[in-house]
Image 1 (spheres, rainbow, N blue to C red):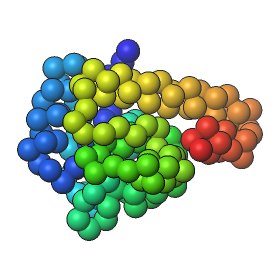
Image 2 (image 1 turned 90 degrees about the vertical axis):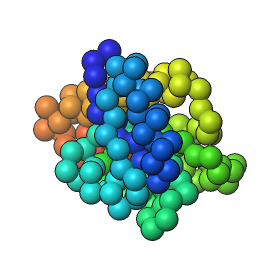
Image 3 (image 1 turned 45 degrees about the vertical axis):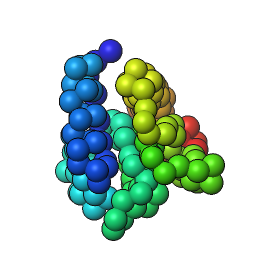
Image 4 (image 1 turned 180 degrees about the vertical axis):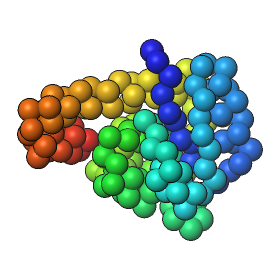
Length: 150
């Protein structure tokens, strides 16, 4: 599978740096953001294919980042990775459009597999929307992206 852009968002710098190093050993090159504010700025500068997002962060928390990213960039697939999860948080994250909800500590192989699945979904959604856009059906293309990301 081709390389894709991953943005990892977590306020625990040691954790996210270590996780990024382990991902590099698996041919993924993630960009890092250490806060919700930084994540939103990075997304505006260079839209990732997949985002790995912690929920509990000071300032703009993960749920708000998820809401804003999915609203502005519905093609971005978001994988929530949290150490403070609950069934309520999982339900809310999925309602907001999260692709997956994982708990820390996470098995690296499971995380990488989930990221690759998220990227595959992004490609499928993009191709479906592009087919309609090519025919001038831009509203239908947007509806496909929005519907597939519910």
